[in-house]
Figure (cartoon, rainbow, N blue to C red):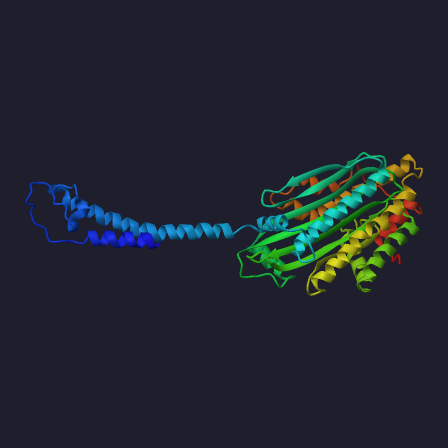
Length: 409
């Protein structure tokens, strides 16, 4: 910049208007110090040269600050990295630790749990999961693990999704009702969402379907720091044939995970589960429940304690479900019992496509991977017109409990 200023000064100095007289030496202009700027210009072209000098000076006046402005803009654009780019840089620079942003810690945790769960389920089934890794255009991606037509599972999906995006003004205003930390003055906010979702549909109608989802959502400030955050999730059991001891074991394991953090959690989240996984058009619950919660933020408990609660709940899945599966997967069954399982799966599909907010959110998120969202649906299901179970049958007992949820522990 200093050298450019000196050039300007020399240019303006040499371009100052001077009194002018006809040259004594024909058309050649003397080469003296005061007229060096027009060394080879004829008398007839000197006024044009004068204009050219001022034009050059004006162009330089404009170019210097413009170049400076463009340089500043380029630097600003480099600084304005997306939230996904900032997180990718953090992961390149250092390993994820307790000091890392919560979004990176949650991503790391659910990826570790996915590997653990897939490994245990492969031991039970004897077949391997298909693993698909994918990326989103706007940042993030996921890992979809699916075992289809296995020895034990007709279909099993254990999926990770990590989503980066931008919330528009209407979404900010809607979410602010539940999350006051969100900045209402922003026209858009960067957000991050990550979760582990799992649905297992066993072949044997005596073995129950199970669903699990634990997730984290965060909006970010321009510098990448957390603005508003919350956790959600839960796990629930959907049997075709009810074994009370299975229901008690499943609920007891979840209650123990909840009680280690807050003894009000289990009764509160069990009720929430019964109310959420409810087919309104059928007037019955999807299954025999478990726990469900959403929007756990700083108004509930601090971030570290809530994350610890999420970790314990997710880690409780294997001890809550695998003992049940081991007992039921090889039980004998007949065609009638298989048909009943298909009908119950039909009700499962109805809830997922009609009422589930997670499915709706996924399908309405730009760039979403539809195959990963709909992997929760069973491989087979059926619907029979005006079907009713036989009175006082095992099938009817299940329906009665689905219409009037029971306290299992």
